[in-house]
Image 1 (cartoon, rainbow, N blue to C red):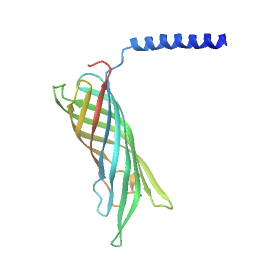
Image 2: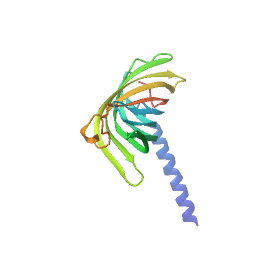
Image 3: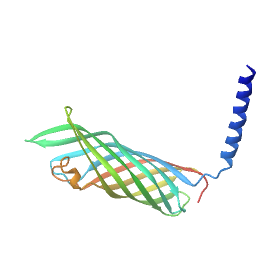
Length: 198
């Protein structure tokens, strides 16, 4: 039994030392963002790919105007409607995006901060017909504009973000028979600043 007590005490001492050491390490300036909204693929005459999506990002601050980091976006309630012989056929659809984002923003102001996003990503689209599924992937570039409103020292409201991501690619010919230009996403959410300020 005494060995158990000694082991427990040793674990507590090691945990205390490691916690103290981590607390002394400087946390880099960064922010985490979570958003939700609506997305639609434009440029299609007889097809309709749209629905609700969520996205998240982690930005590391280079300085007060430039931040870089990974992001993701995923459809949570999307559908693919297609007109065939004057009938509208609607099926479930899936969308997933992962990539790298560069955010260029105005310097910090007391309340409102506009920003520009530039991204490179990998996108996957899936059409679910019940008995079978069609999927395709491609890489692309995107851009977006947004507006952050400061709520307190660390918390921002992403009041609005409008982004356009390229989908016009040969890889999507089977899924988007009559074309498709951009995935347009309109989202809102929150950002939380972590670590020291730049």
